Image 1 (cartoon, rainbow, N blue to C red):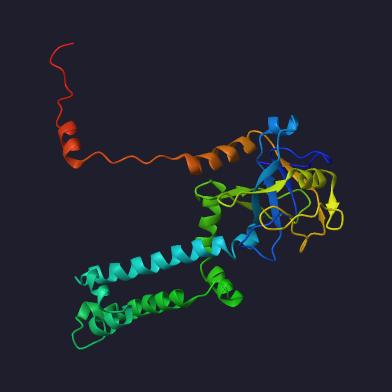
Image 2 (tube, one colour):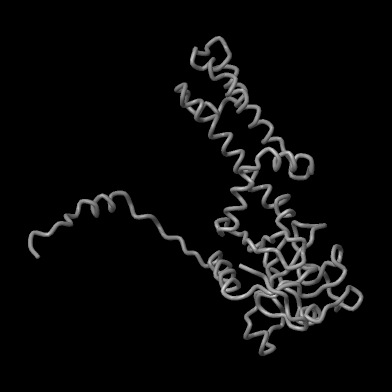
Length: 278
């Protein structure tokens, strides 16, 4: 997948422009990926230009990506603790009445601790401490965000791999825009927005805040707090723009149906598949 240089003066489906906005990313560079149908743009049939906001991978990992990383590491630590309980034949339902630390102190180092439990006490203590640290991390703290990113780089790399392979629902990997610091982008697929047609046409030509049409910023304007000039920066080409659009539409077009009842499955499995004659 590559992003090519744009054709200045033109904005169409797949055009990537700067000065877009995303609610959860104040103070970050936000790009827009135009998704309005090419035929509507070509025939001047668009009152607004719909777009999907995209942010730098580095900024994404301090917001949505950080939350995904935090969830994965927390679940992994919890899984390690449950495994330790299972090894000692301790029911995990005890977590309904006791904290992780209380369980550790009662069953792994307390008077009732068995020999095998005492042998694993140091490891379990480390798991409990990890769970407690993770539970207290706050996304609002840069220091704590960096702590998580530094400590769990293996998980971060797996998240990046999942992004590239389009396995993270709601987040779509895009390569770096030419000339933009070689940092990939992440499109925020659930946060599609729009800009009025006159603003879209101004972006196609390139515009600063003073010359941009004056409209309210709330979901329909530009954000000049980072970039001072709004303009096309790249063009996502076929078949990648079509794949992005397919991914976007599938997010809202999935239909869930009931699972086949167990009894019905049992009856189907009992059907004799062999034939007596040709």
